[in-house]
Structures are given as structure tokens and as C-alpha cells.
Amino acid sequence: MLNKINFSTSLFVRRLDRNLFQDFEVFESTKEILANLFFKDIDSKYEDKFFKLMIEDEVTIKFMRKILRSNEFESWAEDYLESYISEFLDKLTYLKKSNSIKIYRSITCTYDWINKASKSKKISTGNCWSYLYEGAIPYHGCPSDQEFIFHGEINLSNIDWFRTIILNLVFPYGEDEQEIRTYAKKRIKNFSVERVGDILHSQFSKKIYT
Image 1: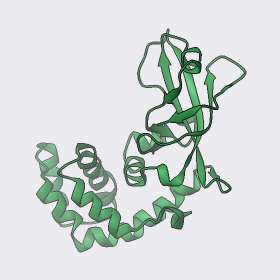
Image 2: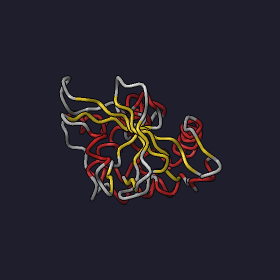
Image 3: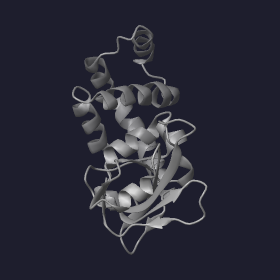
């Protein structure tokens, strides 16, 4: 399945490098990748300085780029990332006929979401999903709120693979949430909603978007 998303290690690393300055999520995730993956595998000349700066909360973009552009990181990325991503893709439920994967998302709210959504012409679901049912965990709301779990399918081309891969490399997204990050305003197919505690799902045939 690796060829279906046209993954290239060198392009992935270059995009990390390019986005460090303009994207805080990428900046913080790259720090985690270096601290928890790269330096645990490699006896690097950059390690002591990196962790000293990290303790002082002074890791700079310039220094991180120096590491990302090093032969050490390039060699590590070629070995580690392709193997990791191949294993990650094997965890997805791929639907060959529609070139899609199954995805899940959970929300909590104080009102009947199904009833409200059934009266809407267009439904927006958000772009933070999980590739596993167990990963669909709501992180907002109160215990007294109702919980709803979205079930759907999304085309491979509508997934933000760069961000999805980054988030699955770092804690807690990879271990707890099994993150799938979609592009905004993309179509969700075969959408149904499970109200936690109910036996039957509610099917929606109208236009559903992320």
C-alpha cells in the first residue's frame, strides 16, 4: 500500500524542514521524533547539545534543520521511516474497490446530535479521525453528555498523509488516538452514527464533509 500514497522519505524530510518555521504542530512533533526516535537509535554527535537545549526549552529551528539535513538523519530516516510507515499502513482497513479506508471519530454533546443532523442539509464532521474504532475517544465534554461515534470511509487522496504520519510517530497521537488527519471539506462516504448505548446505527445519505 506504500505506493498508493506515493511516499518518499526524502520528500517527507524536506517537508519537515520546510514547515518547521510556519507550523507549530510540525515543530513540536519534529522535536519529539528527534528526542524519542532518532537519538534512541543513533549515537549522534548532536545528541548532547540537543537535550541540553531541550531541557532549557531553547531548541531552535536552525539547530533542528542542521540535524534534519545531516547524513546521520538521512541514513536513519531511509531505514526507519519506510519500515515504520509500511507497518502503519498495514494497520488500516483498506477498501480496494473504492480506494478508501475506514475511519472513526467520537464526540460528546448535550443535545441529540443525530436528530439535529438529520434536519441539516450539509453536515461537517471535523478532520481529526482514527483508523481504529478503539481510537475514537472524545477529549472534550462531560460524563453527563451524550457520546456519538461516527463511522465512515474516506478516499486515500483526501487524507493529509504528511500530518497523519507525523502524528503517528509521536505520543499520544500514535499510541492512543491512532490518528488519521484528513484535508478540510472532503467527502465522507458510507457515513453512519452510533449513539453510545444504542444497538442500531443511524445512516446518513446526505452530503457529509470533514
